[in-house]
Length: 187
Ligand SMILES: Nc1ncnc2c1ncn2[C@@H]1O[C@H](COP(=O)(O)OP(=O)(O)OP(=O)(O)O)[C@@H](O)[C@H]1O
Ligand SMILES: [Mg+2]
Image 1 (cartoon, rainbow, N blue to C red):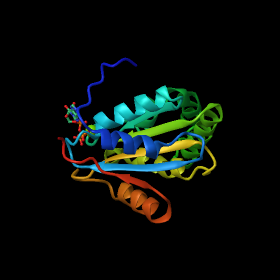
Image 2 (tube, protein in one colour):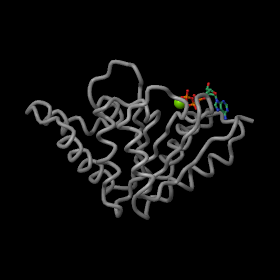
Image 3 (spheres, rainbow, N blue to C red):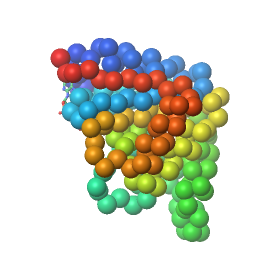
Image 4 (cartoon, helix red, strand yellow):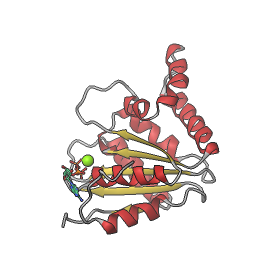
């Protein structure tokens, strides 16, 4: 990556995100980056992901798309092309239910993390389709010893957010240590 990324200000959020993503050698980390539309979340996410990649993380970004007609699990499959063979095997045998796909996803992420730290980001997580939301719980339920950072980006003023997403995130925040970061107003 060159220096073509132009980020004005935002040193605080950039530092917060980098600290929350962590060094990649101390197990699972959960990060919740939440703020209203147009605050620069995606810009900061792309920047943080690119810099984590430069630090040696294997990086991936799944992107929620509210209202778009998506094939089940599509955001995950687009983010993780290496997961496609395992997924296709399940789909062709008719066992692409969320349980089976979730277990296969965890296996895939564990294999990736055995090679080096993984940063799995989900932008506009509140806009994922139901099947993709179902996988969030599997990813977050991975062993805490595994060097995977999950970074959930949420648009807090979105409408029509699925209850399943809210239940997932509220449950996660209640049970686990989740670093909560909010972007402040653009300078
Ligand atoms: N720090 C920054 N420096 C320069 N441009 C920025 C910065 N932050 C955001 N922008 C620009 O502002 C616009 C909105 O930013 P962005 O898409 O990242 O916001 P967002 O919070 O992800 O919005 P949404 O919730 O709608 O997805 C974009 O055009 C982006 O390029
Ligand atoms: Mg965005």
